[in-house]
Structures are given as C-alpha cells and as structure tokens.
Image (cartoon, rainbow, N blue to C red; front, side):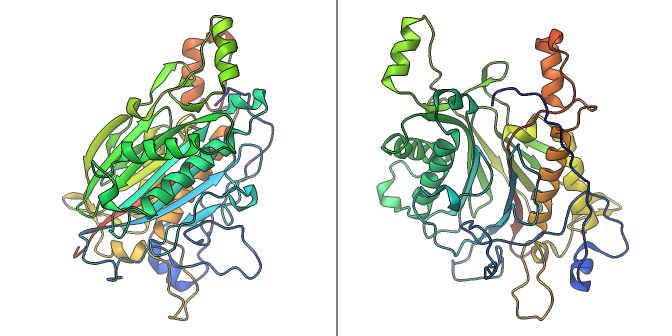
Length: 407
C-alpha cells in the first residue's frame, strides 16, 4: 500500500497458445485473439503448491445437479503475482470448484497462494449454490513495525472462506451478507493469538443462485461489473486521504498509546464502514474483483478492453445485427475438460480472463513510460514528485462469469 518507485525489470508479452484443436475451437478459428495472455492450467479449489504428482481438479461445472436446482451459476477463477517476482501465469492461477472442502486457516505460509500481501478467497455458502468471494490487500506499512502484512490478509480471507463454507443458517441472525461475512472474518482474525498486528482493505461479495449480488467494499480494492462490452457497475474507493485507504486493523495497545502521546492516531476502520451495494446479474455478465495493484495500473476501460477481446474472441459474447449479445455456448466455456473425452485439458474462459487482466496489470506496473491511474493521481496531488509510469505492487484478480441455466 506504500508508494514505491517502479522496479527495473521487464515483463515479456506472450500470447495464447492453442495446444489442441479443442482449445482452438473454444476460441474460434476464424478470429485472431490478440490479447497478451498465456496458456494456463487449472488448479484445485483450495490452492496448493504444484508438485510433479499434482493433478488439477475440474473447474466449476454448470451441469452438475447434486447441489439442487439453482438458476444462476458462476464460473470463477483467480490469478495473482507478487511485486518482486516475474509473473508466472501457469503456476499463479486458481479455478474454483464448489465441491471441494475448504479447510480452516492456513498458518503454514508455504501453503498460501504466492500473492504476497494480497489475498483472496472463494467458497460455496453452506449447502446452497450461493458463492462468497473476495480480495484483501495487506497494509504494507506494517513492515516497518516488524509485522508481515500477509499474515493478516491471508488469515482474514481464510476465516471468511471457512465461515461461508461451514455456514449453519440458524446461527446467522440476520442471514449472512457480504458485510456480516466481513465482520465474522475480522472478529476471527482479531481473536487469533498468532496475529499480533496488521491490517488490510477488503472487497467481499456474495453471489446468489437467484442472480443477486451484494458487495461490501472497504478501502481501495474493488470490483467492476461488465455487461455485453460495456461497464455496467463498479465500486468507488474509500480513502481518508490520497494513498490512505480505509482499512481493517489490529493495533497493539502500545502502538495506540505511542500514537496518542505524539498527537497522532492509528487507522482502524470497521466492517460497518464498508460501502454496501446491491446488483442484479444477467447471463453473460463478467465480474472482476481486484486489489489496488490492478486499479493503480489499469483503468476500468483498460479492463473492459482485455475482457472484451477474450469474450468476443471466444464468442462468449457475439456481434449481432442488434449489437453485442451473449453466445449460445457460454456454459461450455466456463468449465474445464473432465479428462474423460481424451482431449487435452481445456483451461476455462474465466482463467484466461483472470490471467489476461493480471498480465496486463503486471506489465503496466513496470512500464516507466505510460502513466497509469496512480501516476495521474500522484501528479495531481504531488506534482513536484514527477512520478511517471506504473506502480509496482502485489496483484490479485478474481473473475466470475455469470451463467443462467437454460440459456
């Protein structure tokens, strides 16, 4: 979260590698897909470090019926990268499978996604087909106090995922919501004796089987809802001042006393301060949730451009005489191959979208010639700093494609 000059290293643009005829058919052989996105592989619902014997599970399959008759289903994937490493799109990608068990908090750092101080979660809500998801960005300033900001953000997301997965509706009064899930995660991380201090922003959402989306956003992470080649809805960042977002925090008593003695204060916002919005979803909508490592380097229009290339190139969205419409085979695009057809494994469309956005954000973050959103804001508030180019930061992206059954 603390401003830092772009590092001096390079990101090499790569293109989609159609490894099989089936994958080529997925994206249509009659069109050139020119987005800088690599071939990727799916991962298990609870991310694990890849091993030589690791076999990825299926992504979200919309034709399964064991979770009862839902009207809307969601193809969800994530991708991420740390600020001080090259982006590895084949390793740093995740495909959500609602049938996989979600464990309690992962205290072993080796089992976490390689996303640095950024964290994310995706979980089925109890026995329903509703889905809870979100991103959290650890506040980097805690490093100066000898605290690893990733401990708070990753633990916070783990607690929210587990709370959603183990939901017993009778124990939630009122019923679970995006804000109450954020509150539960915050209470659990505050009660964790291994976390002495830390903080993060948060953007938490619940996507329901009836097509309703609720989003609770606190800080400068956020989301955008794209519909048929247009920006339909988006969140506004919450900040106390430039580059000082709202944030959930654990502040030791000693730090509070020191701040009071010197006439300062420690930022400590609460889930009740989150901005809550309600949205109605439609078949073919694309939802993008991301940390400020994305928003500081890409505008909403930049993200729309990346998503549109892939959605139109795959014919998940199609040009018609009446404008852009949803393709007839959208449900086939948001699931990976089941391994029984003999075809090579097909990465899901949502994985391509997550990787495409992450790759674009990473490239923009180390570009010293093209000013991103953060650079433009920096020039506005601090013109004497002469800030140019992108802003190097951890990056985390969660993408959901909305699919209405029967369409």
